[in-house]
Length: 97
View 1 (cartoon, rainbow, N blue to C red):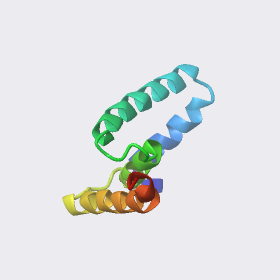
View 2 (spheres, one colour):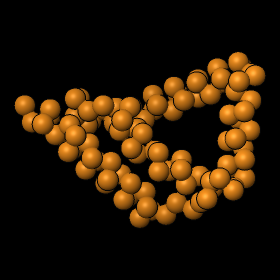
View 3 (tube, rainbow, N blue to C red):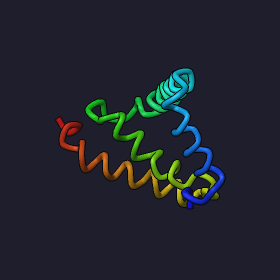
View 4 (cartoon, rainbow, N blue to C red):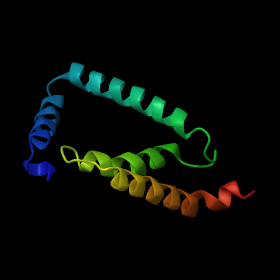
């Protein structure tokens, strides 16, 4: 799991340094904005009523959680399908109008 992996140790180190390094915070925020901009462009064809931040979290949360583990095509496909089903359930009424 992530807690005992090299990636987990790296994440813990980054988090502990954030409190002391404003430049690191700025870099992480900048990288996150860049990543989300690209993802939002990919999500543009979806229903405009959809909460894009929620969709990004639903899509990428499971992938980040499994950081350091092999991600096979079936797992990624299942994550995308689950996120789309959740979005359809949550935002479906908005797009029906």
